[in-house]
Image (cartoon, rainbow, N blue to C red; front, side, top):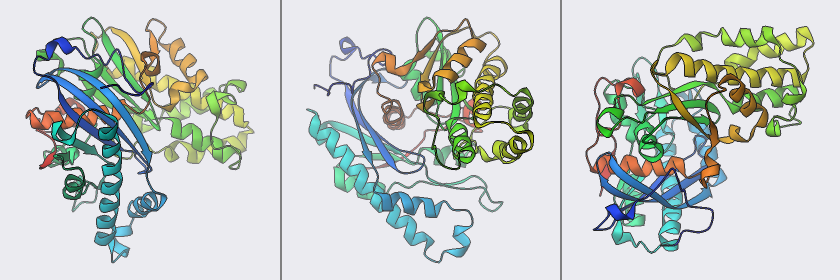
Length: 410
């Protein structure tokens, strides 16, 4: 198989063909973006069983979701819709069917570009944002959006989906569920790594260099705090919508840090919450922005000063998480960056200032496309299901007991 240029994840996602006398097992992982506006799929080859795996991401395909499908998802996630929409169930069914059609296209695209036919494909794993309920009657309720039966018919493949459901049923948060897969893909045998996802919400995963038998119990993954969505919303509010975001932190770098504002943000009760710490929709930046904008008006702070302070704030929360949340005996050998924030030069500089002895490396420097890691993890979740490997652990999701995640539609 010859993946297209620029679509192969090389070291640290290394595949050792010498360990595969009978050939690898092939899977496709499909990840639906949090806003349901984009699909990313990865064709993965895996050698080994359980968590003793060697993995190659052979190809990646990304496709937009039809605007009407995205709009339908947005409508369904509007607060209070269930009690006012008489056709709520019909809308969910329609959304699931539309997503299945889109998922089938991206899966078919990967198969068509490869030498792997449908008969060689072990399974398709799907992870989507789902619908969540936190009311008293449905505490921790989760409903996946994958029409697995339709997708199985369209692709003629086994489909494994609804990974958060079993974790929620056993008392967990429902996520983050990709920590074990991230460890498989990114672990280093000689040094502890931290995966820092600078996305809309900042998430940190601790990937220890321990042996296979000890590592699973020491892996951590949690939300640090608000991320790039906070910077984007702050930019939009303070510029009256003239600028949707601050490219590369160019406005922020021209400002000054306002210590009063940074301390105000750091005093938020969110940062005193113990681990495990994760929410399906991430950390909403509104809680940090509502009074901050009024403070800016009252004090005459500039847009650049506000953005500068917010960037310092994000870097400070990351440094605090390393010191407070990771194992005390952990020596961090490397931080791997992913997410849109890895292109914000000022943010990276401020992180480096606070963590001066830790190498910080963009995932893109490994030849990894920004869209590959998520769907590759989903493919491994599907493989864990088939190999009957529990992918959730109490330190990560809060589950009362580890469970095999996902449901199989043959």
